[in-house]
Image: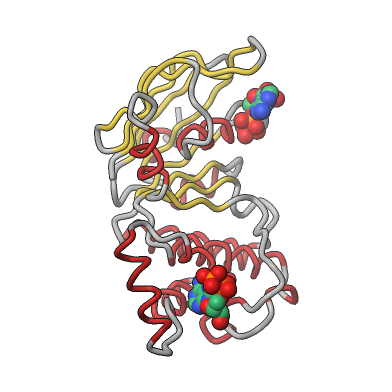
Length: 240
Ligand code: ADP
Ligand code: ADP
């Protein structure tokens, strides 16, 4: 699914955050959004996630102008998006149950029906997707462990697996490693590259320029005053 943001203006209480932001994300591409704190990185992600309607401009998923489309269509787009936040927000259950939770919001009635049929035949539904996603973050062997006992870094890896198991077309990450040590950060960054290899379009908002340089194909720099500059990673980080 290709995502296109065109000439988006957005703000709060009359104060503009963006003046004229345009950005596109293709399948199998990692785009990093960087910029100082308060510049609007989270706001842009919330717009991409279709949580908020922009004041002006278009947000298109595969050519559908989502805010001009019927609500049904918009919700269908919304179901193709996975999200990971700065904190994992796991519940007090096994790691496996936490990841399975991401699979419960099935996209179509057919997938939901298959799910219930699997349940009737006594198999645990979603086990394959769940263990495979946990494997990407190196936690498949810990699937039965309780999530409450995890470190912040391990919990964040579970949160990533939860988003990946759902097999989204677009994966939005809001400062996913800002509270993590280097080892867990490296696991998440590798998982981002794995998502890219699966033809997922990944957008990661980060204040860590080095992270952007490590994982991103393209970088969108928010400079404040509503300005955005987008370019190939190598070009953006080129010495002047
Ligand atoms: P960043 O993620 O880059 O730190 P944010 O997107 O969180 O920046 O915030 C950008 C600007 O928009 C800030 O000035 C912030 O105070 C303002 N802002 C963000 N969300 C809201 C909101 N829901 N209501 C009012 N102002 C907001
Ligand atoms: P429902 O409300 O659809 O009946 P419940 O949460 O009550 O679902 O769970 C019913 C059974 O299905 C439980 O035994 C639970 O272990 C199993 N289950 C629930 N969610 C999942 C899931 N995401 N993956 C695998 N099994 C699940």
